[in-house]
Length: 560
Image (cartoon, rainbow, N blue to C red; front, side, top):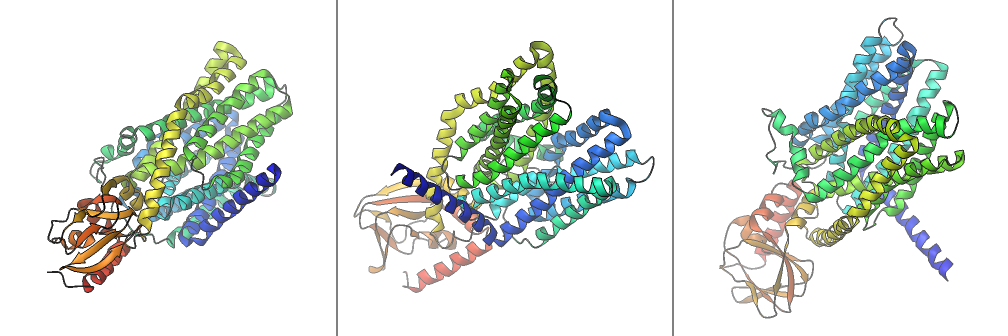
C-alpha cells in the first residue's frame, strides 16, 4: 500500500513537472525568452573557455588568472550601473542590445585572435563582452515575471531557465572543445559571437504589455545615475525578507569563491591526484547541477520555495565541510555533485522568491544588486580560502567555510518558513483577483502588487456595504458569502464568491450608482480607490476590460 502510494505521488509529481515545462513552452513570449537565454549562456561559456585557453597560450597561468579577474570585477560595478536603464525602458529591447554588443565584441576578438601581438586587443574586447554580459541575467530575471500570469508559471519559467543554464554550461564548453581540437581559438570566438547575435532574434519578437515604472524608492532619471545605482540596494534594505535572501545568497557565493581554491587543493593535496583531477572534480559539480536542474522540475507547484532555497544554500557548504574527512575519490565526486544539486535549488528558489517580493518597477535593479553581491562574494571567498588554509590548514578551512552556510540556514529556518506561509496566503489572493475579468490580462507582478494591498473586510448579513449615492473610495472582491445589488429600489443582481464590485464610482469619479447589501455574512477583500484606478488604468487590456464591464453594468438599469 505504501509502495503504491509512493508510486502514485511520484507519478503525480512527474506529471506536474511535465506540465510545468509544457506551460512555459505554450507561452510564446516565455518560450522566446528562454531560447534567448539558452543561446546567450551557451555563447558565454564557450567564450569563457576560449579566452582562458587564449590567455594561457599568451601568458601562462598568471595571465589566465588576471583575465578572469578583469572579466569578473565589472560585475560588481556594472550591474547596478546598467540595470537602471532596464527599469526605465523595455527590458526585452535592453537584452537585445546586450546580445548585440556581446556578439560584436566577441566577433572582434575572433578577428584579432590569429594576429600576432594582438593579445591586448583581444583582452580589451573580452572586457567589453564581459561588461555587456553583466546585465543579461538580472534583466532577464526581471523580464520573466512580466511574461507570466500566475506564480506557478513563474516557478516553471525559472525551473526551465535553471535547466537551460546547466545544459548551456555543458554545451558551451563542449562546443569550445570541439572547435579548439579542430580549428582554433578564433573559431571558438566566432561561434560565441554567432550564438550571441542569434540569441537577440527571439527577443525582437517579444511584445509584452508595457508597464508603468515609477520607482517607489526614489528611482533616478537619466540625470542622476549615481542615485539610480543605489535604488536596488535601497529596495533590498527596506524589505527584511529580501535582506535575508541576499545575506544567505551572499554566504553561498563566498563558499562558491572558496571552492575555486578548494577544488585545486583537494584534488592535489587531499586526494593525492594530479592537475587533471581538478577537471574531474569540476565535472562532478556540473553533473550534479544538471541532474538537480532536471529534478527541480518536481518542485514546481511547491509551497516551500524559500525553504528549498535554504536547503540549497546549506548544500553548498555541508559537502565542502565533509571533504575535510579525507574521503575517497568517488565519495569526493559524490559530495561535489551534491554541491551542484544545491546550486539548482538556490536558483529556482532565489530567483522566484525575489521576483515575487520586489516591486516590479525596480526589479531589474534588485537583480543587479544580487549580481554585485555574487561577484563580491566570489572574490571574497577566493581570497579568504588561501588565508584560512595558511592559518588553520586545509581541513580547518574546509570545515570553517563549509559549515557557515548550514549553520546560517538553521538559524534562519523559521523566517524562511514564515516567508513561504506569506507567499502561500498571497497565492490565494492572486487566484481570487485572477477571477475578476479586468485583472485577468495583467502580468503577474501587477496582480501581486494588488494582492499585497488587499485588506480584509467582514459585513454581517443584512448590513449595507455601501449605499446608492455614497462617495466611492473602495473596490471589493467577495471571498465568501453572497450580496444583493439594488438600484433605484429595484433588484439588479446577486453577487457571489470571486465577483468584484464598486468599480463604477472609482473609474468614473461619481457617487455609488447602486446599493450593495450582504445577503449572508460577507467576507471581502477591499482595495483603495487610488490603488485600484492607478493599476487598472496603467494596463491597456485591463483598462479596456474595465470599460466594457462598466458599460455592461450601467446598461442593466438607469441609476438616479
